[in-house]
Structures are given as C-alpha cells and as structure tokens.
Amino acid sequence: MKEDDVPQYAGSAYGGHKKLLYAVDDAGNYKAVESVGCEIEAHATYDAVAELRSRATEAWQRARRGDASPLEYHMYQRRMDVALLAQTAGFFRWRVRRHLAVSRFAALPESVLRRYADALGIDMAALRRLPDEP
Amino acid sequence: MTRALDSTGSLDARGAGAVSACARPATAEHEAGAFRHLHAAHCESGVMASMLGHYGLPVSEPMAFGLAAALAFAVVPFIKLSGLPLIAYRMPPRSVVRGLDKRLRLKMVYKRFRDEAEGMRVLDRRLAEGHLVGLQTSVYWLPYFPDDMRFHFNAHNLIVYGRRGDEYLISDPVFEAPVVCDRASLQRARFAKGALAAKGMLYYPTAVPESIDLPRLLKPALRANLRTMTGAPVPIIGIRGIRYLGRKLLRMERRRDRRTLERFLGHIVRMQEEIGTGGAGFRFLYASFLHESSKQLGDELLAQAATRMTDAGDTWRSFALAATRMCKRRGDMNVLELVELLHGCADREAEVWRLLRRFV
Image (cartoon, each protein chain N blue to C red):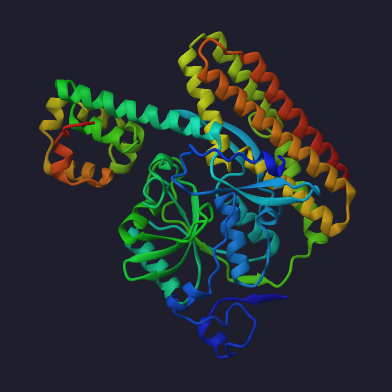
C-alpha cells in the first residue's frame, strides 16, 4: 500500500481516534501513517453494530409483548449471547435459556438475579425492568 | 549484554545517572512522566515495542512483530466469535510476547489469577515499584473505547504505566495518546469471560538486552514463520487455510442462504480490518519488518520478499473491498470472484515464502 493510498475516511467508527498503518513512501521505504478511518472497515463495523442493535431491539419488543423476559433484552443490550452470558454468570447454557422465559425469570430467587446483574454490570432493579425504549 | 530489572531498590543505589532502565524512580507518579506512549498498528506488538523501548532497547513495532514470528493465517471453526468461526491473520494472543521472550531472552513473568482481588493487588504492587505492566483485556469493558468498537473480544493488550488513586494510567498502543481507566472497569476488562478469556493475565520482562543481534536472530524467526505458513499439519492453518476459506465460501453459496453468506463475509472483513489492524495490516506490518531487516543486513532477497508481501496485503484489501461492495449492492454477489481473490492472496503469500525459504 502506497502512502497516498492509506484510507482517510471521515465516517469511521473510531470516534475521532486515529489508527496506525504501515505504508510505502515514494522512495520505497516503509513508514507508519495515521489513518482517520477506512470505508470498508466502517461498513463492516457498522453492520456488526447494527446486527447487535437489531437483536436487542427484537428482544425488547418480545419482552414488551410479554413473550420474553427482560433478561434477554439486557443480554443483547450488553452485546452478549447465551453462551457468553452463561459463562460470565456461571450457569449452564440450558439454564440461561430457560431464564429467558417470562414466568421462569419472574420466579428467580435474589441469588440468581444477583449473578445475572453482576455478569451484565447493571443493578438488580435495572435487571428486572424493561426500559421504555430499546 | 543483558540487564536485570528485578529489584528496583538495589539498582536505585547505582544512582539516577546510570543509563540503565532500572535506575528509574520508584514512584508511579514519576514513572508517568518518564514513560513515552507509542502509537502502534497492533496492540500486542505495540505493547512489546513500547515496553522494550522504555527499558532501553529501541525496537520498532514491525521488528517486534517479525522477530516474534507472529504472522499467520487460520480459520478455526471450533472457536466462535458471536457465532462465527475465528479467523486469525496472526498467531494466537501472547505469541508476540512469548516469541520475543524466547528470542531476546527477556525472562518474562506471566501471571493469571483465580482471585480477581489478588490480580489487582499484584498489578498495584508492580506499579508502585515504578514498573510497566502489560495486560491482556477484553475490549468491551474498557470505557475509553468508542462505543461502536466495543465488542466482546478478549485478546486486547495494553500497558499500565501508573496509577492516580482509583484511576489507572494506560498506554493503549492502538490509541494516539495515553488514556485513563477506572479501577472497576479495568478489573472487569481483565477478568471478562468467554473465548480467549484473559483470566487477569499480566506480564512484564525482568531482563532486557541492550541491543538486538539481528544477523543471529533473523533466520530462526523467519524459519518459524515459514513453518506456520507452509508447514502446518492441518489444512486450516497457513496458506492452505486461505484456500480453505475460499472453499468454505463456495459451500455457503451452494446452500443459497444469502443472509448467512453476507454475515460471514462481513465477519471476515471485520476480522481482517478491525481486529486485524486496518487493511490487512499484518501483511504490511510484516512487509515493513522484512524491509527493515533488508536495510540492516543489506540483503536484496529480503527487500524482494517485502515487496511481494505488500502485494499480498494489497490483494487482501481488494478482497475486502469486493466483499463489502457485494454485500452492499443487492443481487451483485459473485462468490467466484471473491474466491479468485482469496486464491490470489494465497498465491502471493506462497511466493513470499518461496523466496524466504532460500534465505533461511
């Protein structure tokens, strides 16, 4: 990659930060060049973020309809999935999956809820509640 | 000659005038002033280049990456990141640290912890002695990351160079400037669970040589990397891994599930562009290493290999560009073209190693 070809795409996901790349200058030497963003990367990143957001939004709608517990929403809101939440909270996956159901979640003891709250980094009250917007 | 970095107290007695890296003031406040942040393309090679520079061994990031023989390619179907296979463009986490440890005899100390509080105590103690500490962390729980970059990826690396009460002074090599992080978030980031979990991993060198004997070290490093790229016993690693990825795409196309294919392509690009270092960054990083070595040793073959490696990197970029274009424009999917590009990457990388085989 030539120094002039280093992407400088303003719409990046870097949040104003710069990334370093190695490129070739006119004399054929390699040098570190700062990049404010790369369009390809921005697309890939935004797609991934959009995918995560849509999972959270769908879970929020299910919870609102009463088809799922708030736990499912909070899990996706934290960009986790069942496997990661299970590992983080220290439960088997099948248990976490069961807790995504409304009735089972409502019946959970404090001790189990506490583990979920810790795993998700939110407080107990927030865990039980579904926010007004996804 | 190698300097020991063990006991700060006894070395302080040598006086502040000594050039030795150990003759540093023992307080973190001082340390914060003495430390110089290094902006790097990749977190792990950045951490090592920065750390070694701090302890008196100037080494560029590409040199750190190359001497550790950290270039690789692998598709790992049984490690999933958000449900998709891990695609790595370099050796597994901590390979740069371990590779340099071995070749430069840094006597690195590595620690993982069962007890989170103990993990924080050990970090604090080392910082209080005025030393740098390397950490492996999750990206998601680091509050200074832009929100759109926060994914559950557990193999990030950074340096802690000081502490102000509850705030840790952090040199994150992929950022242009030092950042700070509160204690609770740092602890969470260090002990996040999931694939590649860090388990609080911290590391630091206890002996740093004064110079690098490149003529002696280069061949083994190249040989090791040659083995990774061309001699792996399984077809998912090295140049065969690149071709395997191409076949995987063809299989997906036959199943005619466009959404899955698009998600997978997006995933490949993201693993390449973002978790990698931007634009097939590792290929350019390695090319830069080959170039620097060719300059130092006056070797034309290495310079040729560097140019070819840059070629390979550019082909990876073309692949990413084409894949993104196809995902964006409905109905424009041409998997064969993508597979061709992937085979182009494989061919170019094979050519690099054919050249380097003559050198080692």
